[in-house]
Amino acid sequence: MSALLEVRHVTRRFAGLVAVHDVSFALAPGEILGLIGPNGAGKTTLISLISGTLEPSEGEVLFDGQAITRLPAFRRARLGIGRTFQIMRPFPGLSVLDNVAIGALFGHRGGQAQLARARAQARECLDFVGLGGFADQRADELGGPGRKRLELAKALAMKPRLLLCDEVMAGLNHVEIEEVIAVIRKVREQGIAVLVIEHVIKAIRSLSDRLLVLHHGELIADGTPEKVLADATVVQAYLGARRTR
Ligand SMILES: Nc1ncnc2c1ncn2[C@@H]1O[C@H](COP(=O)(O)OP(=O)(O)O)[C@@H](O)[C@H]1O
Ligand SMILES: [Mg+2]
Image 1 (cartoon, helix red, strand yellow):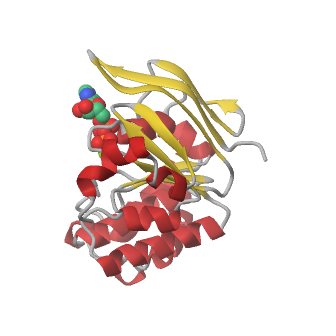
Image 2 (cartoon, protein in one colour; image 1 turned 120 degrees about the horizontal axis):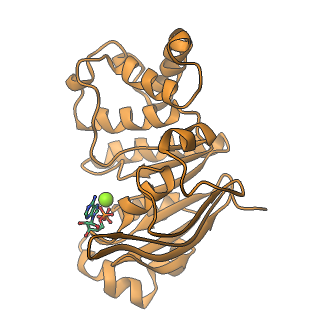
């Protein structure tokens, strides 16, 4: 099967710092790919290079065989790349529903005329992530777990073929984590590919078809979760210090 996403030799520098260094990987349609690594490893930067909020210093990003390396984020959203943000920024004065409707409008052409349709689509997405009962609340009244789901609903409202999740389980308890895992599985059942950044190893192990490990901006492993989590280099770089989890 041909790749949905291809990242080819991508490097991103910030002044003197190399946040992502010569990273290459591919993602198949409908695949769930996990991405782990210590804080500062370059995970969020890599997602931003794919979604278009950042451009690489070197290398290429291809979606569906088309180079998207220099396309702005809204164009990539329209091609089918949706993302969540690690640092959640809901529009505080707006309802939960309208926060998601904005995601729907961002992902499609049509603007204001499409607002009613966007709201209908937003309602579907809220039901999908289990926030249906909160649609008319103000977004800033949601607690942490609700905001994580809101991020997911916003990204899903863009009708993505690839969903990029940046730590959507951070700060959640075991029950909430299981619920988010179930939502991501449902997303995949719809044929949507998912790239998941996560620190909760148990969650990433059970979710991922394949696992990537970033360390100091370099890809140090790419394989099945079983193989990668047993890899001596990975254990030393990342898992060793996390044994207690
Ligand atoms: N906009 C930026 N400007 C300067 N440095 C950045 C910027 N974004 C990220 N970095 C740096 O790049 C490195 C990787 O960051 P990040 O991608 O956020 O890592 P992770 O998500 O794996 O924790 C870190 O050293 C971080 O400080
Ligand atoms: Mg991050």
